[in-house]
Image (cartoon, rainbow, N blue to C red; front, side, top):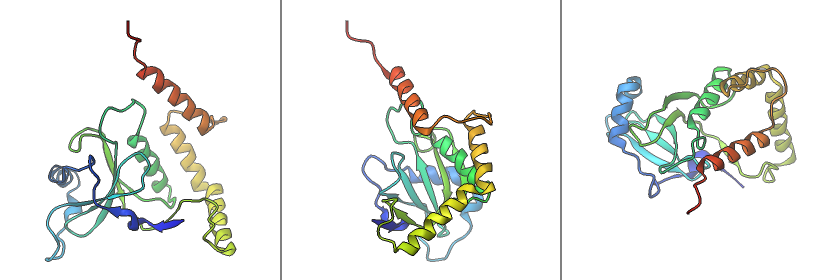
Length: 204
């Protein structure tokens, strides 16, 4: 199964409402160039839709008064584990990818504070694309599937990819050129530490 990116954008779900006036005031102060005059018949104010996908970090499509679109990803509301939902890390990796001319949406802005939305968030450019839920790509013809896999392999071995890997490793505090721990081991360690820090004392 696959779908185009914008097909999954719909109404903002309950519990995820954005304070759009506060967000617009913040963006006008931080990124005034985003608010160039738009068409005379354009609806005033910032508008938001929520994507059905985005894993555990709520993801929104913002439409500016000019008609331009941005994607906003934020930490979910509520009490969170210290290392969970690290949108700051996402933004840093995305910025490294886009600055190395890697085919990724351009990172636009990071807000690391809880204001104005209650949790940190970041903005990136809106890029239309096709999302495949099954990496085996069963809906593609063999020739198309082969072309996709070849492109993935070429990007993986490219110099820009190697620069991104090194830059991302540095962002994560690993500046060695030696072997890196596997993602599975990193995730297991992070989960174990989070569970240990969240454990409460037994009732007396």
